[in-house]
Amino acid sequence: MDLFPLYLTIKVSFIATIFTAISGLALAWLMAKKEFWGKGLLDVVIMQPLVIPPTVLGYYLLSAFGKSSPVGRLFESLGVEIVFTWKGAVIAAIISSLPLFVKPARAALEGVGIELENAARLLGKTEFQVFKSITLPLAWRGLVAGAVMAFARATGEFGATLMIAGNIPGLTQTLPIAIYDAVQSGDSYTANILVSIITLFSFSVLYIAGRFTKGRF
Image (cartoon, rainbow, N blue to C red; front, side):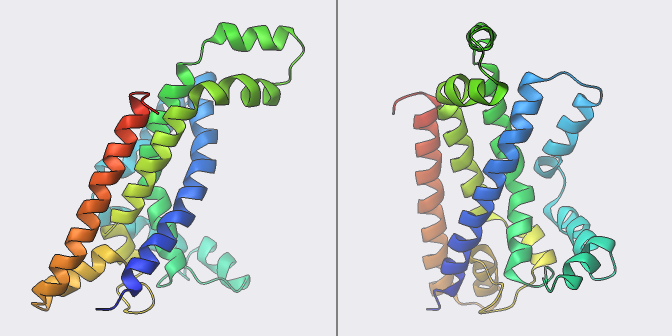
């Protein structure tokens, strides 16, 4: 059995989770701590990947990063190919998993008492110092839970990945796509093994995320 889909899925998921956590933390802090015009609209945009069909999301990504688009031409001029490469799978995983990080991260940040943050400001702390010494230590459980959920979502991404990265064995074929291929070709043995792997992984991730959310670690 070819283990490349498993390797690629882990690689894509780890890279996507890192970028999701960085960008998602900034968005979650903005949504939790600031009031601004268009906040509700931004919230809707962030949560869109949870409700629109994955193939629609994949179409948007394909349109945005295709060679005929300004963004696609920019990346091409830099010598970076996105469409039908593993990098496209990473982008699909980031966009798909972002809401699952932002939602618990925002709740965790909102749960940090403003009184503690204001007290630190009165003591002369900068906004970054307040975030680093007060907000982050108190919200870390929710942030870790969000990162775990984002990793799980990235691991299971199928539709958007298929649209922007394609199904190229040995190049862009992730674990969910390999399962689809095995079923389509009637290879039930491979399909059962891959399904068992991803099911066990998903169960473990949800269990760990639940433990963090309930504060048992």
